[in-house]
Amino acid sequence: MTHDKYKELIQILEECTAACSHCFDACLKEEDVKMMAGCIRLDVECSEICSLFSKGLARDTPFVKELAAACAAICEACGKECEKHDHDHCQKCAEACFKCAKACKDAA
Image 1 (cartoon, one colour):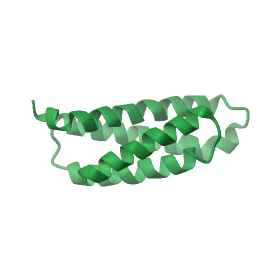
Image 2 (cartoon, rainbow, N blue to C red):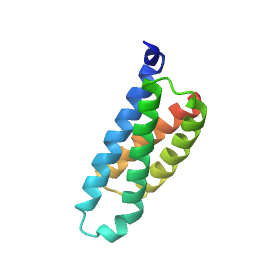
Image 3 (cartoon, rainbow, N blue to C red):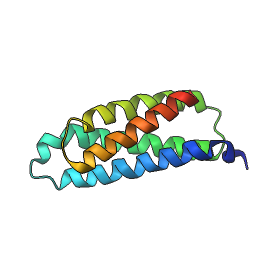
Image 4 (cartoon, helix red, strand yellow):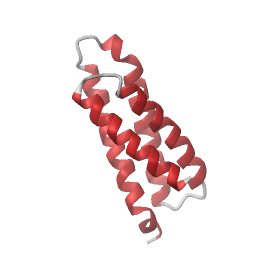
């Protein structure tokens, strides 16, 4: 199958999607949701681009380099925002985002 060559990257993207989705949901339950607005927004952006890129890789998109570059930039931004917050979900999300950003940069 064509997507087998991207198996590891797809897995990293899916892990990042899940981490961002969890962080987004957990941020909405925080006492000061307004303080978490930037984190929530970037969680959504990051989750969406990772999901889109993962699906593209599964169908062997001709836009690997372009999507990888965009995904790396968004993952990096999300990771930087999440690492500002002490919440466990934010720290785990930042870790997943930085791992994904690196994998995407390698693919770009």
